[in-house]
Length: 356
Image 1 (tube, rainbow, N blue to C red):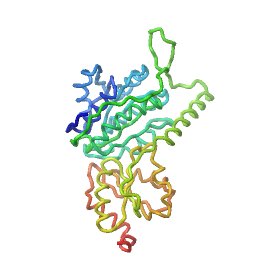
Image 2: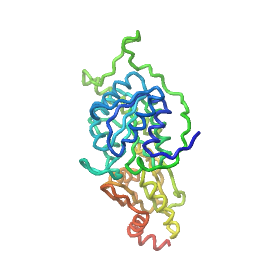
Image 3: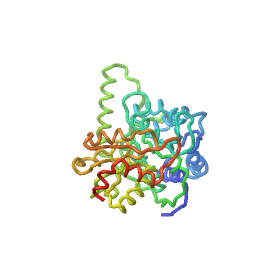
Image 4: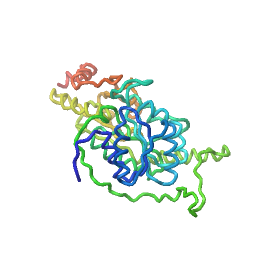
């Protein structure tokens, strides 16, 4: 195992190479560009190929063709480019093809700015394209997780035959941190007996998403929903931080999860029993992390880099059994530890003063 000081985007690219990714199709867009740059230099050394499509639409459809052969393939983009991939993602979900997709969020809507944002949460966790489908969404909060969760993404994609999304932001993608670049540990995965083989003498197979009859369409949809339900039951992931004795909770993912840890420690110094739940899977949302909180937790505050999106899933997770408030910044701005703590204390001031 070697430790490197690298950007988060480079950690993703290195993990993809070590995970056996052989093909990358994409179009450069800040703040994700280092991924295609790194892979352009190093993936051919590992026997792979990087091809820049004429745009994001072409790139995601190239992934469709490559994934149909059973080859590990990845694409990466940022918010406006990720929007252009939505139709292709819907087709990939319908044909059940494993592809790893990276979205390093930038501020929006429109072209927005290059600063960190979490404004793509709805788009990423609720499908994004047309039709009833889901993507597994992994949300790293540091360079090491950018590396580890990318490896995990390839295995999840192969296990469930589904596109898997690694979602970061401009801060995580650009920041340099020490990352332990450990070797890929192969897992026992389902055989790819569904893959097409062209004119190689294999049994003829086709991977299409069109249902010729309404009955066939409904049967397909029901089968997909069963798969998504199985994923939701098994793959929920989160981190608890100082949550065992907490009376209040912060909920934040990605960069906000990092900031929230400092807020929790500062609140504890003031005698406030604050804890953190940091979702690692945004879909499936970690509902299980919130089970049993009624009667124990007096209030929750979500920390988000958007107008307030994840807060809806948190409210659903606790069935509105306690107050759920929001602190947010937008447009590429990051909150400081102090301003988050001050907002929390103002929001829950009467209760916190009594306890302190």
